Length: 465
Image (cartoon, rainbow, N blue to C red; front, side, top):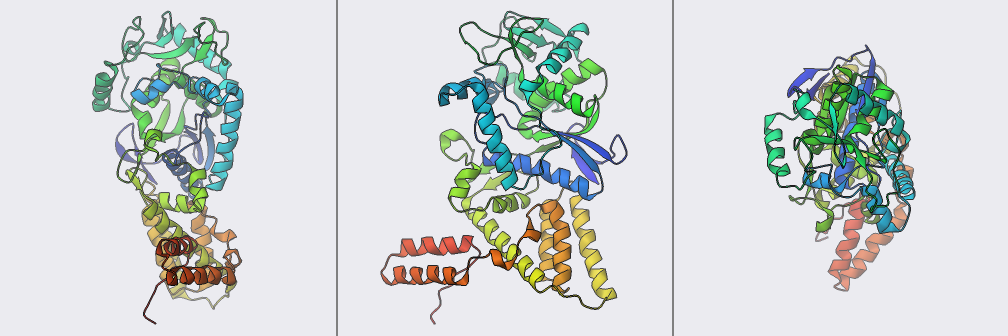
């Protein structure tokens, strides 16, 4: 099994630290709002990675953090130490306590992840439940003379860590320098790259989330939680750390510095990052009105697993362009596959053993596994799925093979039968209604019904007869 390691910028053979056991840490949600489809793409990529590892026989200890304090809005500008705390800002916006906001969006995240069929992590720790661990880690860094204090907080001194920036490479460091020089920072900071480990509460802010510490009342910086929690549940050195590419230059770079600075040991052995998602070929953002949430797509009658199918069609290291046309195509393909699975299950009959048939099945399984183990080439694995669907092996064998593949794809294909389709009468009623609208010249409304039928897996073609 080969994986692209951001740390070495090489495609490497995966070799876990402890035989068949894999420790994996994935950056989870900041629970101040609903995740958008770019976030869900990253979470789905991480789910696929875990499924591929387990498909290869590894036992995965999967830790996903929940950020419910310390993630500041300045992160959008390239400096995670500036701006307002996202949780405190959301509390003001919604007229709730920061704790209520965190619980509401965490509950929504867990429920939405289930709809996308993401495997629940082994551990889902919250930053606010691990303040003691974060303070202890900062104290360890302090003893190693890797920190200093200003009027605004306790900072990690990057000049004391010679390997700072090794994850992203020099190009990302240069880019960050240009960005950060334009920001108004703490004038007492020794270096623009130094980052906050602990931020002091400002009396005028009246924070809801703050704690006593050896340095004063305040709250942890964003980065320290991931180091403290990953090492608590996975040890000082573990196998895999993942996240989005936007975390490479700052968040993950800082994690490595503070973790290895504290322990003197390698932190994560393999670093994997999912690429960005664009919308209609451009940037996605709330201000643009195209940062779609899962709930918004479901309100448009899209099945969450159709979105998961769409994610499968693009390699995790390639930028993915989201369009509703592409999502329509994914939903149609997913419904077709689901319909075929129902037919194969319904007509599941065994034929006599055949060397030729068994050879084909083994070839399909081998091609599927080779695609997975080639740096999670899920699009190629999906192509093998359709090769199986179009092949001449018996339906029962197709069903069994597809159920096996679905352990990775996560589309819940083996739970679906033909009985889950709309009753034929209901489909016919929609078709009849469309015909009536066409006769009445109401073509836009007729087209809307045609689109609805297509999303349900039925294509309508108008011919002369």
